[in-house]
Length: 422
Ligand code: GLC
Image (cartoon, rainbow, N blue to C red; front, side, top):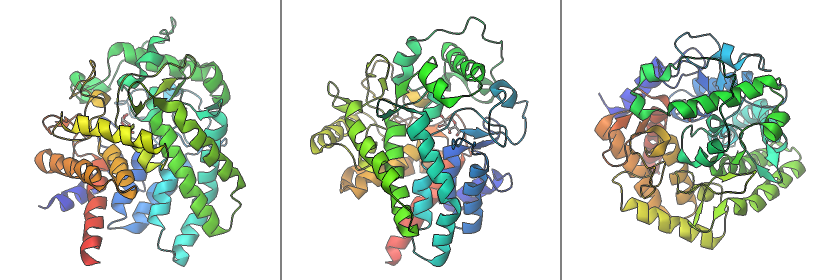
């Protein structure tokens, strides 16, 4: 069976009726940015079904505009922390109380870019929801002009060493309710976050509950407050895509223009001059994290940063490309805490390679774009559709039969086919 057919089979198997789970076992619900990438893949063979991936995600949007990171349409005893641990969250469907990197507007623009009447109708259908979700990031999560994050899970990069400075600055709640982890039952603990990290992750959840999930209070008073290049660059790109759709639909753009100006000005805040890289930063102390991650090069995707910053970013990529066989590791192989198998401490992640390669090629950095794209394809050909891959060996890590891996593969195959025809 071809890899393309296998990818379609995975997405079909993970379909739960209108939405797709990342993989069975470890992740039995609808995840925010997973669904956005999944829509790109499904659109290559069933546009109507791909669109419902987007509308079902929006069904979980809170009245304040936030689209949560996970939507719990059931209560699976095999998953932790599920709906009861998140408590009385404020959306129409039980959910987490945090968001995830807002790739959705970019995906919607990509999927509706043929200027047909139907494309326009689809954009009009979801525009207000997308707008409200961006406004939420700019209002509920912004501190002194920079978009922040209150939880490593919100960044989509759960245990990346970037978060250690923020986590080191907090203590585990003395009254943390006891719990049993389920993630380690589904995958080898050597791939997963440590116990201390998990206690801190749940301390933040407990704080959110204690303020009734008031998102402004969670940002201002919560135990963790960092700025993340992933959320920053993804939002900046998505603001630009939202603006293009606003123009297409004849909507006002003034507020979005303000968001874009604010975002461009904030890019410099994340520039770690010692490393010559965009890194995360603790917003309360100003301290930078200590390594090049797989969102450091998203400056290209957001079309932001100075020519010098971009040149240094590429130099770092060249250095890393000489150290691993498979770009782009989630953490710097020269950092002391690099672990090629442990989740966000080293493995390469399909959706990050997708965004990084797209940004590089849009900005004319074709050789590095091709390396990032081809390395992921090689890892998939060698090992299958895993959640993430060891960047040294190409072996799959954590979970197999993974939806966004299948989706990125399909999306790239489709593009190659279109180029071949043109
Ligand atoms: C993990 C990843 C996160 C992803 C989720 C579901 O928590 O870190 O980015 O959305 O799994 O795939």
